[in-house]
Length: 360
Image 1: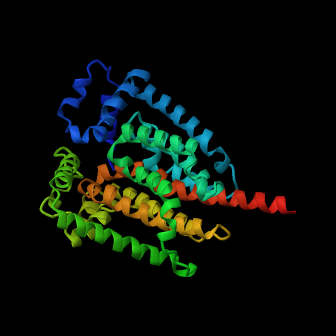
Image 2: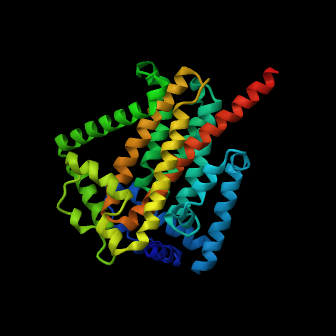
Image 3: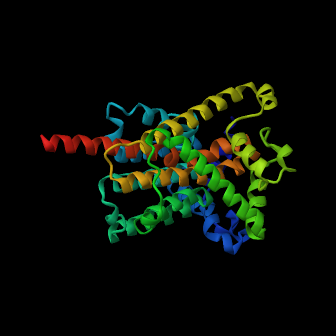
């Protein structure tokens, strides 16, 4: 997949920051201001702190991101069973956009700090302590920074924070599915059911604001200068049920015609297969963890449903309109969808080892 647009954005963000209005803030919808501030904030951070040279800036970003990764993931990367985590970090798209001076790089940095924070809370803290004042304040700060840095792609992380905060209160009203052998398939079916339910609500509400936002993002992905823009999707209503099934697939894989026209898209297919494979394997391991409290097992089941639905709505629909942009767009989801379950499982194994050693 082409990353020229990533290079263009990087060059734009590295330009000297002289006039905030030149970055387009005057064109933003006031109701959407918080979710549209990320370009201005990233331009201020990257254009001010980094050298105005793409190569030097990329080296600097690589060093900073590497330090953040090692600082937060060191205890996981040196474990014997850390192969999947290493593979995830070095997936081509994730690796590229965590080294270029782009909005993805700044967001990957803050979101990796945030999910490490939540992964430890989920495993080591009792559910009743998930909303202690110091934890709640840190959670809110991370989410505000993430939203300011990336806007809409941070919505699934906001939902994660909201769900963790709300779970101690709503847990008694949630049903736990107990058949461990069928868990994953059943949870996928439940995720699909709730997705279709939400689509039905959107269709029935005819909310013009959400429709206008959808048109805005659709237009931002359908660029005339990109060979991977899919104008054949323009006449398809994303809120029709059949299209809501097709679009998430098209955001992950090229059509046969695209693959024949651009054979190098085979690399895109391979990364998408790796992306889906790691997602399935890591979450399957997490929702089948033994010896956690029943409430935490129930939390992980509902967390998987929430993360899956948020991917479909935020990344799976919009990304279908441009395969190259989808490749870049989904890197924002990797920390939540791929790395978070691996960290939860690793923390669980560490906690289990400590418990067993203390019992000897």
